[in-house]
Image 1 (tube, protein in one colour):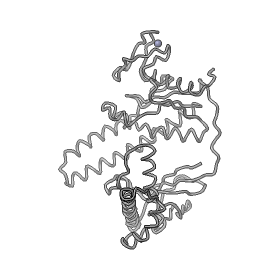
Image 2 (spheres, protein in one colour):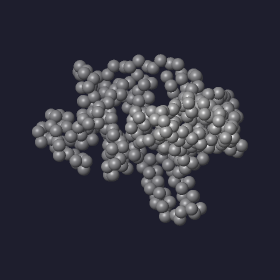
Image 3 (cartoon, rainbow, N blue to C red):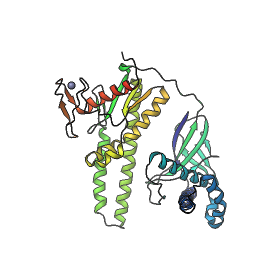
Image 4 (cartoon, rainbow, N blue to C red):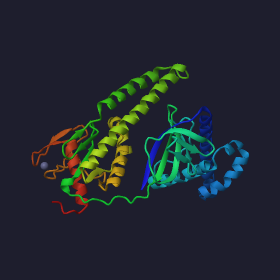
Length: 370
Ligand SMILES: [Zn+2]
């Protein structure tokens, strides 16, 4: 199985300059490759792939000599990135690939091979950059796949490494109605469970989100181009980073708990993009970071042999009475509670939805439910 590890890097001033050169050169090659691909298509209606682009790299290096200082494999990694950006575009219809900007908050470059992790001395040796000090807080064994070096918006450096540990995925454990849990995204809560439990965002995270709003307001009042504005922007970046870490920790704990306590987890495939267009939901959904939570559930399920069940997003999970099946077509987003006119059950909107998500997903499995 493939596993990802992320470590903080502490480059020297000299190494920082080399890393920055790599970031700049790789961005340059990405934009060059994207442009080349678009132009070739416009002129010849033919598509070129990363093999074709790699063949053009030596000529480009002769013209732009600064590229010679960069690890050649990192540059080739960028032509592959352009390929995958197009694949995603065609597969998910998810926006045409963009040119990379210097202003993106996270800047990175790939190191596909030939990097060396030294756990004993706490270093990562990167081609053309050398041995960089690193905090290697987790030990692992396996085959090193590709890695990515990145700089965060607050100027911290990291390396993310994919490792193939050559272990077979755990065999799936069987599940039944009583060992399956349905979960729904709450409007006010982070998740709502079919057991009736509601899990809110933790208080420390709410406090940070509050502080972020204050800092955002402060930034908007500063004069453009002023030093104070730069300061305010750095403060805002720092709080973003804190929020990210806090959210990740919270999501890791919650997903581990849900996966440990249940054999199967039922979810709704959400159209998050469609929901964000609905303004009053935008804040809740983007804050909740639902998709990153689902990713954590998925890989923990894979590790522990549990199952993730999904229902389509067009199934009316919140509008259907989970007791008698009555369809309440008048239910609006504002209605937090409703009483079924047929069986008189009083429903909490989100809990009713979570129960239905569990019900539908088990039906889709054609299980004999005991
Ligand atoms: Zn009913």
